Image 1 (tube, rainbow, N blue to C red):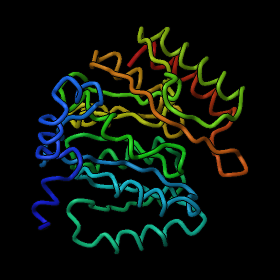
Image 2 (image 1 turned 30 degrees about the vertical axis):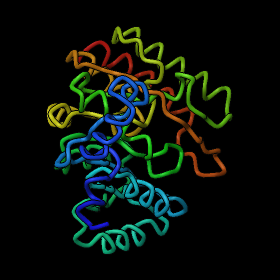
Image 3 (image 1 turned 180 degrees about the horizontal axis):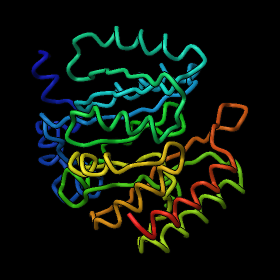
Length: 276
């Protein structure tokens, strides 16, 4: 098989979808979530990184395996471990691969996840933007399902929910689960949305939404989640939720968020729920 034929039959490509449509029928394809991703569409994967030497390379490999044209924008938030060396190696290995561009940026001072995301958002060149944590809690193979409502022009923003119930998730901390549900309910009270997982990492945006919101974003740490949710809701963007799997980490395995971040998120819910 030639390189051109392999490209045509790449999963989610027009030729690949047409083959499945002719075999299964259009109705079956819809039920199975099979659709066509435009060949020239580029996905911007924004990855904030802080002390993730143990998982970073594996995560980047998993992102590169997803058969979608993309750029990986990695922002090192002043890591104190070997993260920057790994990032430099990954950037060098990427070379001239236009299908998986790798772009690396760095903060000289640790500022937090929200600040790293703002830096990444300001650099995107793609048509759709997704947030990806540098650990292995979320599975990049689920990108096609998350992109589908935007590509089909049903949504402007997609949240990947850990709590919709039809995807596997690791059983961990009851109080973290309760805290997440509480913050989501409080956020919904102010935004009038019916989200099930406001604190999720997987948030997907049309490029136009990111371009509009990035200059307004203020929160440097985990207050980013309620802030951007409130700003998206206030502008009445079309929002979808898609179930995603979740393999949470313990604190011993490197989990960063703590109870102080929960109180900060609660303050941000009130702050951005009341005024822009």
